[in-house]
Amino acid sequence: MDGILNVNKPYGVTSFSVVSSIKRLSSQRKVGHAGTLDPAATGVLPIGFGQGTRIIEYLVDNSKAYRAEIELGISTDTYDGSGKIIQFKDPSGIGREQLVSALASLNGLVYQTPPMYSAVKYHGRPLYKWARAGITVTRETRPVNIHKIELLNWQPPMLTVEVVCSKGTYIRSLANDLGQLLDCGAYLKNLVRLRCGIFNIEDAVSLAQLEDAFRYGYWQQYVHPLDSVIINWKAILVDDDMRQKIGNGRPVVIDEDGVIGGCYYPEKQLNLPPSWGKYCRAYTLDGCFLGVLRFNSERMEWQPVKVFI
Image (tube, rainbow, N blue to C red):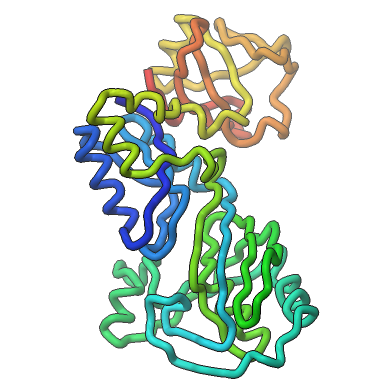
């Protein structure tokens, strides 16, 4: 069994617990997830199993979308509802115009400091372990991209926003930053991941559905193929000789006609334009997904980095 499941993570369980459940249901040893969700968060959690564990790393780099419910006037040490309340402040003076202006200032490239209660490591130890020991350490700020932050609902002191962001973004930190901008404090009350790369919540399957699917033998209908997470990359087709070459880890070089050694580029490019990006997909002539190749700009060649056949 090789592939990816688009799982709708339930409230109150860890991402690791979902992985353990999939291991039990599928009898697979190699199972992993893309993009950790906090226990209190729900929504899209892609799970790779078998060879799928080797491809989900490319999914982590994709943008993600969330629906977040934020309450103004309360601050917690974890920036969400799981922590201790550390401040109350009256938010009644905050109007819609002021709120919209504050949200707009959080759009685009912003710098975030990871919460102390997070899995980011400091000297090889997760920050949350330092926090539980009562130790606060200095964390480096990190750039993240907020592609979109839209106010969906405003019922003071509660607001609901939809956020589209880059990898590494902490929505908890975004809520805390909003509270600081408004000078009243805020915390993340509820979070749903709506999308992770190509996977949407509308198509996500619950653990209960998977239990039945594995029990009665129709689980295959929920499995996405390995190459689904990179379907937007450029693709090449290779014959048997080139397949063996790529399988042995040897690079592919394109000539002036766009063909070399049985390697065919469907769009017949005369060279490798920057629009191809850093990676491409390789397939055999019968349509089987062969692997992932990475472009070496110094040598002008594609180097196999993951081979699946």
